[in-house]
Length: 112
Image 1 (cartoon, rainbow, N blue to C red):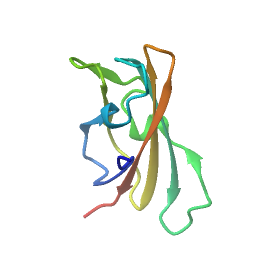
Image 2: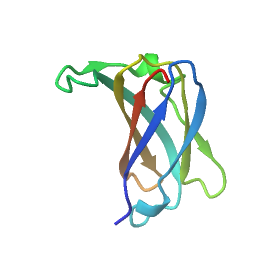
Image 3: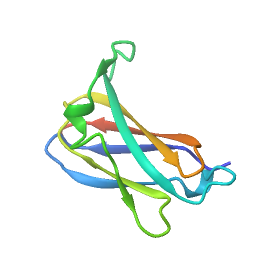
Image 4: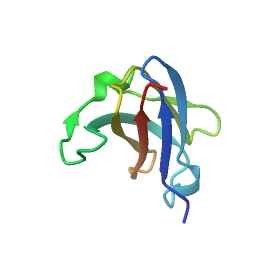
């Protein structure tokens, strides 16, 4: 089974794209990704139970770009974030056969 949890560290002012590859977990009968939506939540590093919504704070857009070919990868763009917070970004991929997969990406923001 492929590793489906990715961890990244970033500084608050960094902005860059990240590609999510759904290929290793491609659902049976699916040939391509037709859409992908991202959402995010955050919590203070030392208080993981204080979860709040953070999609517009850490993501440039909640709609991922589907990369071609082979149409099994999606691209999201990270921006901003609050120092000393951890973020969980969930990307929901919808496939041509109706299957749906979620990938999770964890981002720790801290000023270095």
